Image 1: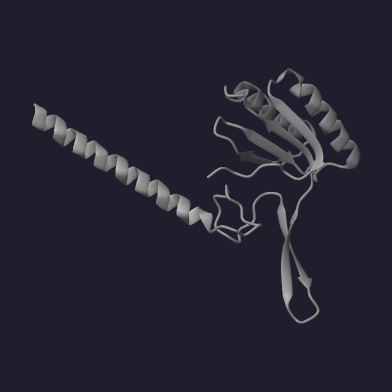
Image 2: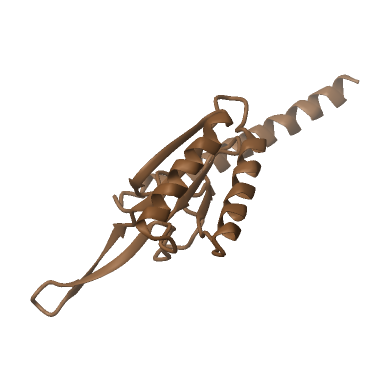
Length: 168
């Protein structure tokens, strides 16, 4: 019995050491990431654009071309957030259904980028609303704000870039 306990202790100690070594290796790989334009939560390979970014090439005058990433301004953003209890999933589902129905009433498809960004279901929904004219955009925003009054843990923004990136 004593011998079995000692063997079990040695095996568990070895597993714990191995797990710590894996964590140190993962941390060491991420420490060298000093690029200010890096996207630590991006699941996309380097060089692939995320929603909300557009590449703009510019001539520097010496024959070299620089490429800058510019953030896209979205007309309307809805961010479903959590306070340690998850988001209002029913509110998100109801809102998405409402967006589809609103578009059907206008005989349009209202496009949006849906970005899950948190560990508890946090999600950001970003609308460009380029398929609508200015008056229709204002009407959509007003109607969406009215629809979201009953939804818990939600923020809305206008004329801003998406605030979050996808989690890995």
